Amino acid sequence: MKWRVVDFEYWNAWMNMAIDEAVGEEVKSGASSPTMRFYGWSPSAVSIGCFQSLQDEVDLDACRRDGVDFVRRRTGAGAVYHDKDGEITYSVIAPEEIMEKDISKSYSTICGWIIDALDVLEISATFQPINDILVEGKKISGSAQTRRGGVFLQHGTLLYNVYPSKMFSVLKVGRAKISDKPITSYEERVTSILRHARVSKDRVLQELRRSFTKGKEWETGAYTNEEMERARQLVVERYSKREWNFSR
Amino acid sequence: MQTVAAEQKVKGGKLVRVRIIHDGSIVFQVIITGDFFVHPEEGLDSIERSLVGLKVPTSSEEVEKVVNGIVSSESIKLIGFSTTDLAKLVAGVLI
Image 1 (tube, rainbow over the protein chains, first blue to last red):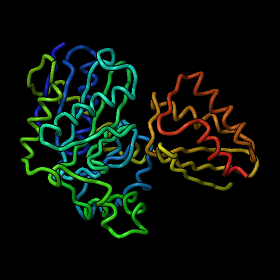
Image 2: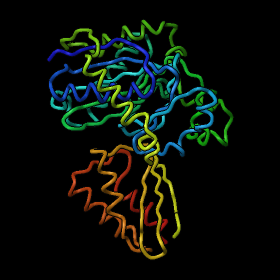
Image 3: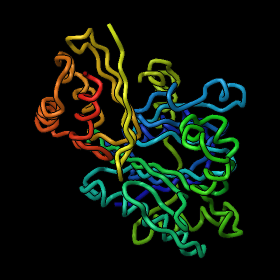
Image 4: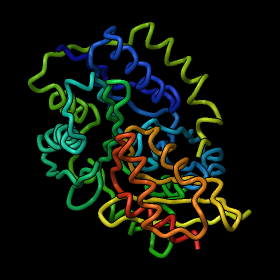
């Protein structure tokens, strides 16, 4: 089965989540190929896991003050600050039957692709179950997965650069976790590519595309008109809605 | 009517929070939040609904029996916490 690779582009938070869902629908119907997409968030945004409470996790006043968007994902896991300049995000969207049935193994497999890319950049990384990748014991990547209606979606982040002060201003979790510690202790828990290798974001993307597509038939592509139209509809119907974002 | 809440970071797992509304004798609403995974995701709504109507207090064994029942009948997979973790958390605030 031939994969479609959509190269890195920026979208806002609502569209990023809506594109994942719209592509999933088209993959399900067979209209679109299994898809790997790489993307950024503009403006910077916070996404929360589908089981989290926005009020518990996010300082909404700080988001409004700093122009940081927020959105609820359709996947579990924790709140993430997606810095416009500091992060590469990926999604893998495919029929469930071509992916591993075992959830833990499929996390390990896709995280393995990221580890492979980092390895070529001479950054030694390890998979930390359930859904993280560590470099020298510090988190550099986190992922989340859902399987609905026969469609597999895993999306995740790779920190290219890290801006702890921005992270702290919008994530309540981060602040609570370091409330009894100096700010440097949070920095001790996370790391980024630039702390280990002087490489451009384009070079990282090149290696990610190589490792994600290794051994697969693939071609670069764009979203179809149907996907984009559906994504815009999902923004209106779901991702921009208070009922969705504040549902827990 | 009163609201009670608790949270637990499961060792080697995820953070689980529960918020429960009860009238001193019966549970009216349960909201479970956290950075865990539930497959399918709608399974968490089922688990929450299954706990409505529990008596106050209820033992963790009783809560676990209810949760195990719904998890089994709806083939729900929990990742990052167990039914035992959840049951202890829920029973712990229903006292």
